Amino acid sequence: MKIAGIIAEYDPFHNGHAYQIKQTKAADAEAVVAVLGGDFTQRGEPAFCPKELRAKAALRCGADLILELPLPYAIGSAERFAFGGVSLLAALGCIDLLSFGSESGDREGIWAVSEVLSSPEYAETLKSCLAGGISMAAAREEAVRRILPEKADLLKNPNDSLGAEYCKWVRKLTPQTEILTIRRYGAGHGEMTAARSGIVSASYLRSFSEPEEMRPYMPEAAYEVLAEGCAAGKFPADPEKLATAVLAKLRTLSEEDFARLPDCAAEGFYHRVYDAARKAGTLSEFYELAKTKRYAMSRIRRIAAAAFTGMDLSVLNLGGPPYCRVLAMNETGAAVLKEAAQHPTGIPILCSLADLEKTSPEAALFAELESRAEDLYQLCLPYPGPCGMEYRWQVIRE
Image (tube, rainbow, N blue to C red; front, side):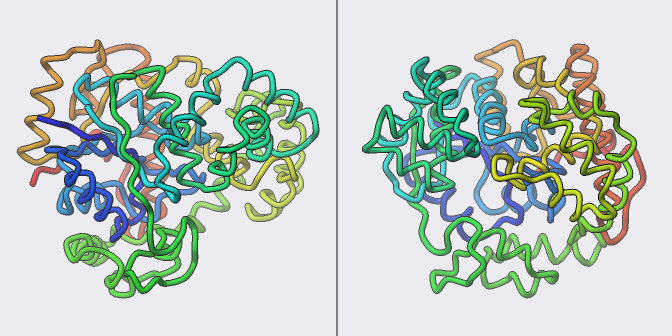
Protein backbone atom coordinates (compact mmCIF):
# COMPACT_ATOMS: atom_id res chain seq x y z
CA MET A 1 0.00 0.00 0.00
CA LYS A 2 1.40 3.39 -1.02
CA ILE A 3 0.85 5.83 1.84
CA ALA A 4 0.99 9.62 1.61
CA GLY A 5 1.34 12.17 4.38
CA ILE A 6 -0.07 15.72 4.57
CA ILE A 7 0.65 18.27 7.31
CA ALA A 8 -2.21 20.73 7.78
CA GLU A 9 -4.47 22.76 10.03
CA TYR A 10 -7.75 22.53 8.06
CA ASP A 11 -9.07 25.58 9.92
CA PRO A 12 -11.65 25.13 8.48
CA PHE A 13 -11.56 22.32 5.91
CA HIS A 14 -12.39 23.70 2.44
CA ASN A 15 -12.40 22.85 -1.25
CA GLY A 16 -8.68 23.48 -1.62
CA HIS A 17 -7.91 20.86 1.02
CA ALA A 18 -10.23 18.36 -0.66
CA TYR A 19 -8.50 19.07 -3.98
CA GLN A 20 -5.08 18.35 -2.46
CA ILE A 21 -6.25 15.01 -1.05
CA LYS A 22 -7.87 14.08 -4.37
CA GLN A 23 -4.73 14.94 -6.34
CA THR A 24 -2.57 13.05 -3.86
CA LYS A 25 -4.64 9.92 -4.32
CA ALA A 26 -4.53 10.46 -8.08
CA ALA A 27 -0.74 10.16 -7.74
CA ASP A 28 -1.30 6.51 -6.74
CA ALA A 29 -1.51 7.05 -3.00
CA GLU A 30 -3.84 4.42 -1.58
CA ALA A 31 -4.02 6.05 1.84
CA VAL A 32 -3.60 9.60 3.16
CA VAL A 33 -2.35 10.33 6.67
CA ALA A 34 -3.02 13.90 7.83
CA VAL A 35 -1.03 15.44 10.68
CA LEU A 36 -3.40 18.00 12.15
CA GLY A 37 -2.60 20.96 14.37
CA GLY A 38 -4.65 20.97 17.58
CA ASP A 39 -6.41 23.61 19.67
CA PHE A 40 -3.96 26.45 18.98
CA THR A 41 -2.59 27.25 15.55
CA GLN A 42 0.63 28.29 13.88
CA ARG A 43 -0.69 31.83 13.63
CA GLY A 44 -0.62 31.91 17.46
CA GLU A 45 -4.39 31.94 17.97
CA PRO A 46 -7.03 29.46 19.13
CA ALA A 47 -8.31 27.41 16.22
CA PHE A 48 -11.46 28.78 14.59
CA CYS A 49 -12.80 25.26 14.34
CA PRO A 50 -12.29 22.63 17.11
CA LYS A 51 -9.99 19.78 16.17
CA GLU A 52 -12.86 17.31 16.63
CA LEU A 53 -14.77 18.91 13.76
CA ARG A 54 -11.68 19.39 11.59
CA ALA A 55 -10.62 15.76 12.02
CA LYS A 56 -14.13 14.52 11.25
CA ALA A 57 -14.39 16.73 8.15
CA ALA A 58 -11.00 15.58 6.85
CA LEU A 59 -11.95 11.94 7.38
CA ARG A 60 -15.24 12.36 5.50
CA CYS A 61 -13.49 14.20 2.67
CA GLY A 62 -10.77 11.73 1.77
CA ALA A 63 -8.18 11.46 4.55
CA ASP A 64 -7.83 8.04 6.15
CA LEU A 65 -5.85 8.57 9.34
CA ILE A 66 -5.58 11.77 11.41
CA LEU A 67 -2.72 12.30 13.86
CA GLU A 68 -2.42 15.27 16.20
CA LEU A 69 0.53 17.62 15.88
CA PRO A 70 1.51 18.34 19.51
CA LEU A 71 1.15 21.89 20.81
CA PRO A 72 4.88 22.81 20.90
CA TYR A 73 5.08 22.32 17.11
CA ALA A 74 1.55 23.45 16.24
CA ILE A 75 2.25 26.96 17.61
CA GLY A 76 5.86 27.03 16.46
CA SER A 77 7.70 28.84 13.69
CA ALA A 78 7.49 27.38 10.18
CA GLU A 79 10.68 25.44 10.86
CA ARG A 80 9.37 23.93 14.10
CA PHE A 81 5.91 23.28 12.63
CA ALA A 82 7.52 21.40 9.74
CA PHE A 83 9.90 19.52 12.04
CA GLY A 84 7.06 18.27 14.21
CA GLY A 85 4.91 17.21 11.28
CA VAL A 86 7.65 15.39 9.39
CA SER A 87 8.84 13.76 12.63
CA LEU A 88 5.40 12.25 13.21
CA LEU A 89 5.19 10.93 9.66
CA ALA A 90 8.69 9.49 9.99
CA ALA A 91 7.66 7.84 13.27
CA LEU A 92 5.08 5.76 11.40
CA GLY A 93 7.90 4.20 9.43
CA CYS A 94 5.71 3.56 6.38
CA ILE A 95 5.13 6.92 4.65
CA ASP A 96 6.10 6.79 0.97
CA LEU A 97 5.08 10.29 -0.10
CA LEU A 98 4.82 13.77 1.41
CA SER A 99 2.26 15.99 -0.32
CA PHE A 100 2.01 19.75 0.14
CA GLY A 101 0.45 22.73 -1.59
CA SER A 102 2.67 24.94 -3.72
CA GLU A 103 2.17 28.22 -5.54
CA SER A 104 4.84 27.38 -8.12
CA GLY A 105 4.57 23.61 -8.38
CA ASP A 106 8.37 23.66 -8.76
CA ARG A 107 9.25 20.48 -6.89
CA GLU A 108 12.88 20.43 -8.01
CA GLY A 109 13.34 24.10 -7.13
CA ILE A 110 11.84 23.69 -3.64
CA TRP A 111 14.01 20.61 -3.08
CA ALA A 112 17.08 22.60 -4.15
CA VAL A 113 16.19 25.38 -1.71
CA SER A 114 15.82 22.80 1.08
CA GLU A 115 19.34 21.61 0.35
CA VAL A 116 20.60 25.16 0.83
CA LEU A 117 18.63 25.50 4.09
CA SER A 118 20.37 22.36 5.37
CA SER A 119 23.89 23.55 4.58
CA PRO A 120 26.55 25.03 6.89
CA GLU A 121 27.07 27.78 4.31
CA TYR A 122 23.46 28.89 4.76
CA ALA A 123 23.81 29.02 8.55
CA GLU A 124 26.79 31.35 8.28
CA THR A 125 25.19 33.48 5.58
CA LEU A 126 22.00 33.82 7.61
CA LYS A 127 23.96 35.22 10.56
CA SER A 128 25.46 37.82 8.27
CA CYS A 129 22.05 38.80 6.90
CA LEU A 130 20.46 39.03 10.35
CA ALA A 131 23.26 41.36 11.43
CA GLY A 132 21.71 43.91 9.08
CA GLY A 133 18.67 44.24 11.35
CA ILE A 134 16.11 42.76 8.93
CA SER A 135 13.38 40.26 9.82
CA MET A 136 14.03 36.53 9.96
CA ALA A 137 11.92 35.95 6.84
CA ALA A 138 13.79 38.60 4.87
CA ALA A 139 17.18 37.36 6.12
CA ARG A 140 16.28 33.78 5.18
CA GLU A 141 15.37 34.81 1.65
CA GLU A 142 18.47 36.96 1.27
CA ALA A 143 20.74 34.17 2.53
CA VAL A 144 19.30 31.74 -0.02
CA ARG A 145 19.61 34.40 -2.74
CA ARG A 146 23.33 34.71 -2.10
CA ILE A 147 23.77 30.94 -2.47
CA LEU A 148 21.08 29.95 -4.98
CA PRO A 149 19.90 33.20 -6.62
CA GLU A 150 17.82 31.56 -9.34
CA LYS A 151 15.47 29.91 -6.82
CA ALA A 152 15.37 32.41 -3.94
CA ASP A 153 12.10 33.97 -5.13
CA LEU A 154 10.32 30.75 -4.19
CA LEU A 155 10.60 31.89 -0.59
CA LYS A 156 8.31 34.82 -1.36
CA ASN A 157 5.47 32.30 -1.70
CA PRO A 158 4.05 31.13 1.67
CA ASN A 159 3.33 27.55 0.62
CA ASP A 160 6.59 27.13 -1.29
CA SER A 161 8.47 28.54 1.69
CA LEU A 162 6.82 26.11 4.12
CA GLY A 163 7.34 23.32 1.60
CA ALA A 164 11.08 24.01 1.64
CA GLU A 165 11.04 23.50 5.41
CA TYR A 166 9.17 20.21 4.96
CA CYS A 167 11.76 19.07 2.45
CA LYS A 168 14.61 20.10 4.73
CA TRP A 169 13.32 17.77 7.44
CA VAL A 170 12.51 15.01 4.97
CA ARG A 171 16.18 15.10 3.96
CA LYS A 172 17.25 14.69 7.58
CA LEU A 173 14.60 12.35 8.99
CA THR A 174 13.13 10.25 6.20
CA PRO A 175 15.15 10.69 2.98
CA GLN A 176 13.45 7.76 1.26
CA THR A 177 10.14 9.67 1.21
CA GLU A 178 9.08 11.09 -2.16
CA ILE A 179 7.90 14.68 -2.53
CA LEU A 180 4.67 15.66 -4.30
CA THR A 181 3.82 19.31 -4.88
CA ILE A 182 0.16 20.13 -5.56
CA ARG A 183 -0.08 23.34 -7.57
CA ARG A 184 -2.33 25.75 -5.72
CA TYR A 185 -5.04 27.51 -7.68
CA GLY A 186 -7.90 29.80 -6.73
CA ALA A 187 -7.33 32.32 -3.94
CA GLY A 188 -3.82 32.70 -2.58
CA HIS A 189 -2.72 32.05 0.99
CA GLY A 190 -4.44 34.56 3.28
CA GLU A 191 -6.31 36.23 0.39
CA MET A 192 -9.57 37.77 1.61
CA THR A 193 -11.60 37.43 -1.60
CA ALA A 194 -13.81 34.79 -3.18
CA ALA A 195 -12.49 33.01 -6.26
CA ARG A 196 -14.58 31.79 -9.18
CA SER A 197 -12.95 28.39 -8.81
CA GLY A 198 -14.74 27.93 -5.48
CA ILE A 199 -11.38 27.64 -3.74
CA VAL A 200 -10.76 30.37 -1.17
CA SER A 201 -8.28 30.78 1.65
CA ALA A 202 -9.03 29.55 5.15
CA SER A 203 -8.45 33.15 6.29
CA TYR A 204 -11.40 34.24 4.14
CA LEU A 205 -13.65 31.56 5.64
CA ARG A 206 -12.65 32.61 9.16
CA SER A 207 -14.19 36.01 8.42
CA PHE A 208 -17.63 34.36 8.47
CA SER A 209 -19.55 33.26 11.54
CA GLU A 210 -22.19 30.92 10.10
CA PRO A 211 -21.59 27.58 8.33
CA GLU A 212 -24.15 28.52 5.67
CA GLU A 213 -21.92 31.42 4.56
CA MET A 214 -19.02 29.00 4.08
CA ARG A 215 -21.03 26.33 2.31
CA PRO A 216 -20.14 27.33 -1.30
CA TYR A 217 -16.44 26.96 -0.54
CA MET A 218 -16.25 23.56 1.14
CA PRO A 219 -17.32 20.00 0.37
CA GLU A 220 -20.88 19.25 1.45
CA ALA A 221 -19.60 16.67 3.94
CA ALA A 222 -17.41 19.30 5.62
CA TYR A 223 -20.29 21.76 5.71
CA GLU A 224 -22.51 19.18 7.40
CA VAL A 225 -19.87 18.61 10.09
CA LEU A 226 -19.65 22.35 10.80
CA ALA A 227 -23.42 22.76 10.79
CA GLU A 228 -23.78 19.92 13.31
CA GLY A 229 -21.00 21.41 15.43
CA CYS A 230 -22.61 24.85 15.33
CA ALA A 231 -25.96 23.43 16.44
CA ALA A 232 -24.19 21.68 19.34
CA GLY A 233 -22.46 24.88 20.49
CA LYS A 234 -19.00 23.67 19.42
CA PHE A 235 -18.43 26.21 16.62
CA PRO A 236 -17.21 28.83 15.90
CA ALA A 237 -14.52 29.57 18.45
CA ASP A 238 -14.09 33.23 19.39
CA PRO A 239 -10.47 34.11 20.34
CA GLU A 240 -11.64 37.41 21.84
CA LYS A 241 -13.18 35.47 24.72
CA LEU A 242 -9.63 34.65 25.85
CA ALA A 243 -8.01 38.01 25.14
CA THR A 244 -8.19 39.42 28.68
CA ALA A 245 -7.12 36.09 30.17
CA VAL A 246 -4.07 35.96 27.88
CA LEU A 247 -3.04 39.49 28.83
CA ALA A 248 -3.61 38.71 32.51
CA LYS A 249 -1.25 35.74 32.20
CA LEU A 250 1.37 37.86 30.42
CA ARG A 251 1.20 40.46 33.20
CA THR A 252 2.12 37.86 35.81
CA LEU A 253 5.38 36.89 34.07
CA SER A 254 8.80 38.18 35.03
CA GLU A 255 11.52 39.08 32.55
CA GLU A 256 13.14 35.75 33.35
CA ASP A 257 9.87 33.96 32.50
CA PHE A 258 9.73 35.69 29.12
CA ALA A 259 13.36 34.75 28.46
CA ARG A 260 12.35 31.09 28.83
CA LEU A 261 9.63 31.31 26.17
CA PRO A 262 10.27 29.98 22.63
CA ASP A 263 11.39 32.64 20.12
CA CYS A 264 11.66 35.28 22.84
CA ALA A 265 15.18 35.10 24.27
CA ALA A 266 17.26 36.05 21.21
CA GLU A 267 18.90 39.48 21.21
CA GLY A 268 17.25 40.40 24.48
CA PHE A 269 13.84 40.59 22.82
CA TYR A 270 12.22 39.39 26.05
CA HIS A 271 12.90 42.82 27.60
CA ARG A 272 10.65 44.47 25.00
CA VAL A 273 7.93 41.82 25.34
CA TYR A 274 7.98 42.15 29.13
CA ASP A 275 7.64 45.93 28.90
CA ALA A 276 4.77 45.58 26.42
CA ALA A 277 2.90 43.25 28.77
CA ARG A 278 3.32 45.72 31.64
CA LYS A 279 2.05 48.69 29.61
CA ALA A 280 -0.73 47.25 27.46
CA GLY A 281 -4.36 47.59 28.48
CA THR A 282 -5.59 45.13 25.85
CA LEU A 283 -4.11 42.13 24.10
CA SER A 284 -4.19 43.97 20.77
CA GLU A 285 -2.22 46.81 22.32
CA PHE A 286 0.31 44.30 23.65
CA TYR A 287 0.85 42.95 20.14
CA GLU A 288 1.34 46.43 18.74
CA LEU A 289 3.78 47.46 21.49
CA ALA A 290 5.84 44.28 21.18
CA LYS A 291 6.17 43.96 17.41
CA THR A 292 9.08 45.46 15.50
CA LYS A 293 10.31 45.48 11.93
CA ARG A 294 12.46 42.49 12.84
CA TYR A 295 9.91 40.55 14.90
CA ALA A 296 6.60 40.11 13.07
CA MET A 297 3.13 40.03 14.59
CA SER A 298 2.81 36.28 14.02
CA ARG A 299 5.87 35.68 16.18
CA ILE A 300 4.46 37.84 18.98
CA ARG A 301 1.18 35.92 18.85
CA ARG A 302 3.02 32.60 19.12
CA ILE A 303 4.99 33.88 22.11
CA ALA A 304 1.72 34.88 23.80
CA ALA A 305 0.15 31.50 23.02
CA ALA A 306 3.15 29.68 24.49
CA ALA A 307 2.98 31.77 27.66
CA PHE A 308 -0.77 31.29 28.02
CA THR A 309 -0.59 27.51 27.66
CA GLY A 310 2.37 27.17 30.00
CA MET A 311 4.98 26.13 27.46
CA ASP A 312 8.66 27.07 27.68
CA LEU A 313 11.99 26.20 26.10
CA SER A 314 12.41 23.07 28.22
CA VAL A 315 9.79 21.34 26.06
CA LEU A 316 11.62 22.14 22.84
CA ASN A 317 14.89 20.86 24.27
CA LEU A 318 13.33 17.40 24.35
CA GLY A 319 13.60 17.14 20.55
CA GLY A 320 10.88 15.54 18.44
CA PRO A 321 7.38 14.43 19.46
CA PRO A 322 7.50 11.65 22.09
CA TYR A 323 4.39 9.93 20.72
CA CYS A 324 1.88 9.69 17.87
CA ARG A 325 -1.67 10.37 18.98
CA VAL A 326 -4.47 9.08 16.75
CA LEU A 327 -7.48 11.41 16.50
CA ALA A 328 -9.51 9.73 13.75
CA MET A 329 -9.41 6.87 11.25
CA ASN A 330 -11.40 4.77 8.83
CA GLU A 331 -10.75 1.16 7.79
CA THR A 332 -7.91 2.22 5.50
CA GLY A 333 -6.40 4.25 8.33
CA ALA A 334 -6.54 1.21 10.58
CA ALA A 335 -4.64 -0.70 7.88
CA VAL A 336 -2.00 2.05 7.90
CA LEU A 337 -1.56 1.56 11.65
CA LYS A 338 -1.10 -2.16 11.11
CA GLU A 339 1.53 -1.37 8.49
CA ALA A 340 3.25 1.02 10.91
CA ALA A 341 3.35 -1.76 13.51
CA GLN A 342 5.51 -3.73 11.08
CA HIS A 343 8.08 -0.89 11.03
CA PRO A 344 8.56 0.10 14.69
CA THR A 345 10.54 3.29 15.24
CA GLY A 346 10.37 3.38 19.04
CA ILE A 347 7.69 6.07 19.12
CA PRO A 348 4.42 4.86 20.72
CA ILE A 349 1.32 5.16 18.52
CA LEU A 350 -1.87 5.17 20.61
CA CYS A 351 -5.30 6.77 20.79
CA SER A 352 -5.63 7.46 24.51
CA LEU A 353 -3.81 10.43 26.02
CA ALA A 354 -3.99 8.67 29.40
CA ASP A 355 -2.14 5.70 27.91
CA LEU A 356 0.35 7.88 26.05
CA GLU A 357 1.36 9.88 29.12
CA LYS A 358 2.47 6.65 30.81
CA THR A 359 4.99 5.81 28.08
CA SER A 360 7.71 8.27 29.17
CA PRO A 361 8.32 11.40 31.28
CA GLU A 362 8.48 13.40 28.04
CA ALA A 363 5.12 12.02 26.94
CA ALA A 364 3.63 12.94 30.32
CA LEU A 365 4.82 16.53 29.88
CA PHE A 366 3.36 16.77 26.37
CA ALA A 367 0.06 15.25 27.53
CA GLU A 368 -0.17 17.79 30.34
CA LEU A 369 0.33 20.61 27.83
CA GLU A 370 -2.35 19.27 25.48
CA SER A 371 -4.84 18.85 28.31
CA ARG A 372 -4.21 22.37 29.61
CA ALA A 373 -4.54 23.84 26.11
CA GLU A 374 -7.86 22.05 25.60
CA ASP A 375 -9.17 23.24 28.98
CA LEU A 376 -8.39 26.83 28.01
CA TYR A 377 -9.59 26.46 24.43
CA GLN A 378 -13.03 25.35 25.58
CA LEU A 379 -13.61 28.88 26.89
CA CYS A 380 -13.59 30.15 23.28
CA LEU A 381 -16.58 28.04 22.28
CA PRO A 382 -20.26 29.06 22.33
CA TYR A 383 -20.92 26.36 24.97
CA PRO A 384 -17.63 25.66 26.78
CA GLY A 385 -17.04 22.15 28.01
CA PRO A 386 -15.52 21.21 31.39
CA CYS A 387 -11.86 20.61 32.14
CA GLY A 388 -10.40 17.19 31.43
CA MET A 389 -12.03 16.64 28.04
CA GLU A 390 -8.74 15.58 26.44
CA TYR A 391 -8.73 12.50 28.62
CA ARG A 392 -12.25 11.63 27.51
CA TRP A 393 -11.48 11.92 23.79
CA GLN A 394 -13.07 9.15 21.73
CA VAL A 395 -11.29 8.29 18.49
CA ILE A 396 -13.43 9.28 15.52
CA ARG A 397 -14.17 6.30 13.28
CA GLU A 398 -15.94 6.39 9.95
